[in-house]
Image 1 (tube, rainbow, N blue to C red):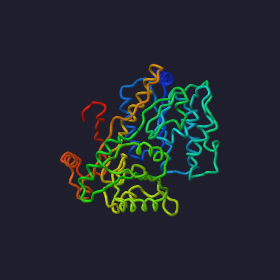
Image 2 (tube, rainbow, N blue to C red):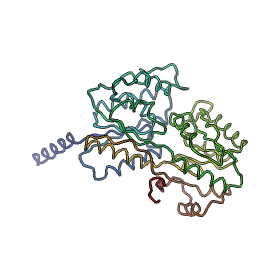
Image 3 (cartoon, one colour):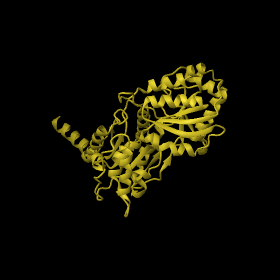
Image 4 (cartoon, rainbow, N blue to C red):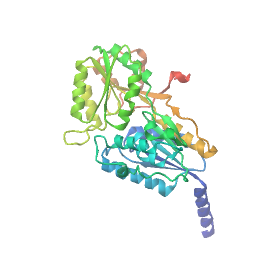
Length: 383
């Protein structure tokens, strides 16, 4: 019996040593539904995969948006990499790219590393800790060039130039760019169904890294016949309330995805559910979400990128690299989900088209967004 156990233990040990290792580093924590959606996609990609070990590391940065915690979380993530020595690293959402991606890049010759570093420091310290520099976040320590470790990204809202990715080798992933055509169409459908007709639309978000990164993409999209107003990014709940009231006065519907980092008068984070409840109560016009959590947080309706697609695609890209040694080109999101709160639809007096009413009857009154995925019409696939 002892000999059998020793042989089994040896086989397990040899298998673990031979298995390729993938470390998934999330910017946030499992209390955010988005993270669960991404993990669901990762698990789907891993179904049937052999010879691969996967670990998940959660930086929990959404719940601790301060420089001291950023410093600790970045150091913890780097230690996780150094200790486990993964064959590939997957980074989810923007903050992980800044704090973990940049120091682990394998740079091309003549890459403008210092220029990228300077921009990242400005991004991380703005309105948080302007007195800190690159060393505080560990951005002064770059990976030795003789340690190849590909980086795969997902959940990136803007571009990846600010992280230096185009200046490095073995970096790829999938962008989380919103489906702006679907958002614009839904805004106009909801506006037409509302007893209060808006003439404009305004993006309102907190001043988080992810939110700021998307402003240019939203502004470049087509929103007609609604007039597009300049996006607003605020730090405090009081500022948020002022923008909501001003938008109602200007005949503007609001569009939002990032509201989890708003602070009260004491500098404490305001619960997202409180933010959305107040916004729903005080906005004259319907408010549309663009994030997976919006309906679960008490919002009317959301058109958001599928987190499970992000997780599945990025893990498949990592598995492809481990099997072939080849990096695949970057991808953009093709799937989005639609969530709706029928109770708020009735409260707003919205007379939505039959397809929306059928969707509401199917879901009933729900507290969590169900991921009813529709493929982008551009992909040629049917719902």
